[in-house]
Image 1 (cartoon, rainbow, N blue to C red):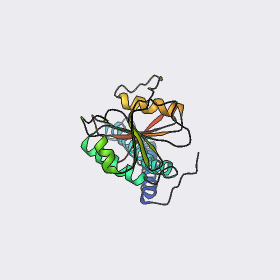
Image 2 (image 1 turned 60 degrees about the vertical axis):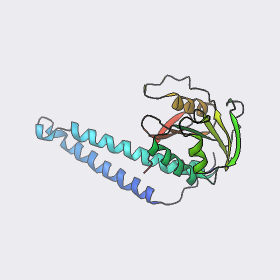
Image 3 (image 1 turned 90 degrees about the horizontal axis):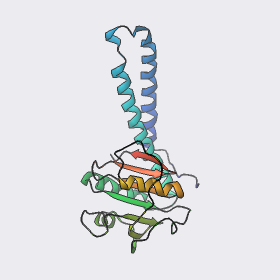
Image 4 (image 1 turned 180 degrees about the vertical axis):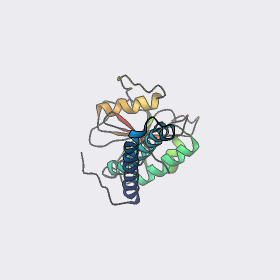
Amino acid sequence: MNKPNCDVSPMKQQLSKGIQQITIELQQSLDNLGNLGNENNCLLGKLEEIKNKFIQMESVAASFYLNCYLSAFTDKYVDLAVCVKRLSDLRHGALIVVQRRDPLDSFILKGTAIGATLTPALLEAIFYPGTPLHDGAVLICGNQIVSAANVLPLTKAVISEKKLGTRHRAALGLTEQSDALVLVVSEETGRVSFALDGKLHPIATA
């Protein structure tokens, strides 16, 4: 794997502050274990709050590393971030494959050739609901949109999360067989995630 291009950023500071706060709250919860019989010291609510903060920090961390993983393979990673934010706000489902080192021809059922420079406007147009190309995956190589309406292999793994749709299963399927990075925007919730090495990571879009 190429060394991620990660500069010091406000996101790092946010991660550091968030993890420190979680550490403090965990220590406070540990200190309160001696008073478990006291209703005023019930830890259930506090543990739920800490769990939600962990989920938030995971999302921030994934957003940070997403830029690291993309920047070594495309100069358009900022444009990709802008695009998925807009798609998320509009709740337009999307599946975007970024080719890295591994050739993907043997894993993808090719759709419609595009051969155009990557821009947020073009990606948004491709994934606009009802258009002929919106229901497949876009393939990006370098700074180019190579093709659209591609079909990806679905994961064969047993997934406990029942809410994962076809896009997410396709993202996992391709990344289980290659080093590609796949961005997914949920049509139902607008949530954004990326798949890498057969694992799915939620990312923050704010």
